[in-house]
Length: 173
Image (tube, rainbow, N blue to C red):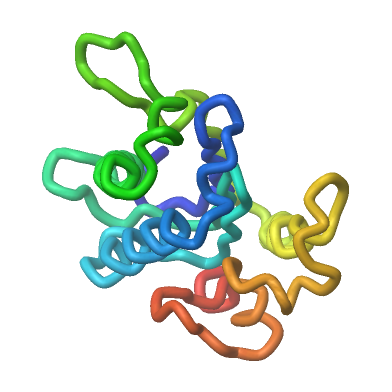
C-alpha cells in the first residue's frame, strides 16, 4: 500500500478462527484505529469487524516512524491479543501457537488484501457490501445492519460516530 491512496483492505484472523467474536478483541481493534487516526497516520472511511475478519476503507496518511500504519495496526493488535489471551484465556491462545523462531503466536493471516479504490462508485459499493455483511449468508449476526455495533453503518445512516475516528468518504472523493 502507498500513502495518500484509498484502499479496501481485508485482514483475516489466522485459520479463520473466530477470535473477533468476543467483545474485548473488537475493542482492541477500535482503540488501535482511534490511536492511529488521532496521530494523523490514517483516515478511516468505513469498517466492519466480523468474527474472524475485518474490512476497512481507509487511507494511510503518514509513516509511523519507519513503519507503515497498517503494519503498526497489525503488530499492536497482535501484542494486545497475546497479552489479553495469556491473562484471560490461555487455552484459546494455544490455537495461535506457531513454531516460528521470531514469534510464539500468530494472529493474522499473511495474505491481507489491499485493493486501491480510484472510482467513487466502487467506494460506495464496498461500503454497502461491508455494512450488510453481518446480515448475510452464514453470518446472520443481525437482521438489520443498524443493529450491528461494530461497523461504520450507523455513521453513514444516522451521522453518529460512536468511535470518534470516522470520516465521511464524501469529504475525500
